[in-house]
Length: 483
Image 1 (cartoon, rainbow, N blue to C red):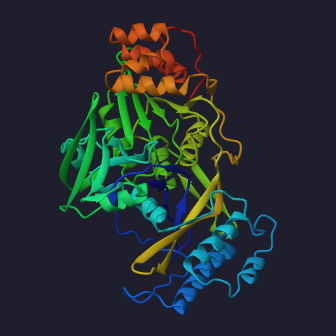
Image 2 (cartoon, rainbow, N blue to C red):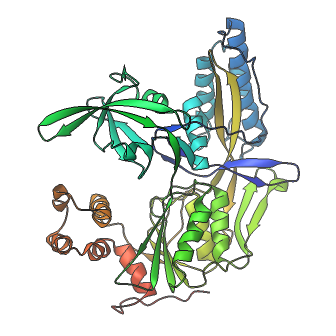
Image 3 (cartoon, helix red, strand yellow):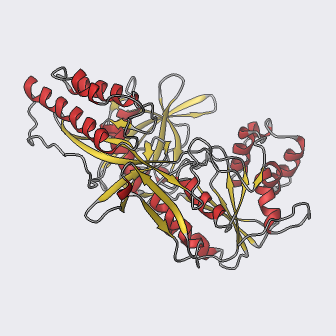
């Protein structure tokens, strides 16, 4: 599932805009849901019929779809010079040439590519559906993560704990060879996901192959679909640093993020300080970044949004700031982007938190999400457009796009990523034998003695530095003043 982030925020009286700020790719088996944000672009509806479109109707649809995208860019793209090109050229170039939806898709993608803007993209039906699903954080399915293996088979690579598939006994590593008795051999992974989807309370039958040592077992399971909720917030309490609460934010995409963070803060109400980890967090809802900052900031600007038209510029300001009053460290890396940078930038500029780690990604652009409706051959498919409509500045007026945010305490990214991944697995569960091949003798000894936390802290230098800043035990770091 491709997760992209949107949110709605009042910009000018009478209008509500949907914005996009960052993305992450993830494939999940879930059911679709209805999502119809307000938008500026014209919406086009076709007759509610299952009859195939005539060539004339399909050409009209293709032309209409192209026109919607062209006009959206012409009216709202954040650079009025369209990155130094004549936007009228594309309208004339494709005049009367589009005969099919595929023609329109190719033309739109070619036109958008000319902007040299990787964040302004056309979303075909499956990708747009996945984007909208990710925002709700309220899904209906069985809770499986799928990917093709080296031989093209459909492999279960992840499960949502206590979701229907997990309860039915499906295991990571199982191969799905049939869905409702239809073989999956040669079936694209997206098609498999679509077939497994369905409404809450309905049943899907999976035929599985499971390896047991040298033998292979064939299983059939019938699974009732249900609602699945995803937590984007993880917490941890250190034994070595008992006054510190650790909060990991995996994404800013979920509308449940703020409530999950509040729950985490409430669980850490006796702690003197927090570590908030946004490493690897590629972004999400700007609204989430603003509201999260507002939990810790009493006053002042959180972020300034600058659009093509000055009258649409606006600022988000802080006014709460009482959720947690202790010291805070934010962990960042080169993959901390977009909404992560809004949060980190606001906290740093207001001297509310130390940033530890490495330079952030540097995405300072805001995208509008526009829903475009088209009449498919046998179904009504929604497609979308993510369009860059503004840039944002940190409270100090800094444009971080292409630059990123410098940490208060820079630490080179020297840690082996595979090692960290293995350590994370070790902290959560028993460490497989292969994991030990990646670990130093010191780490092996720590893990063999059951000292998973010590191993984690030993390998994760930014995290160790954050802990020492907040609860010094080695007296090797001089903390810079906050507030």
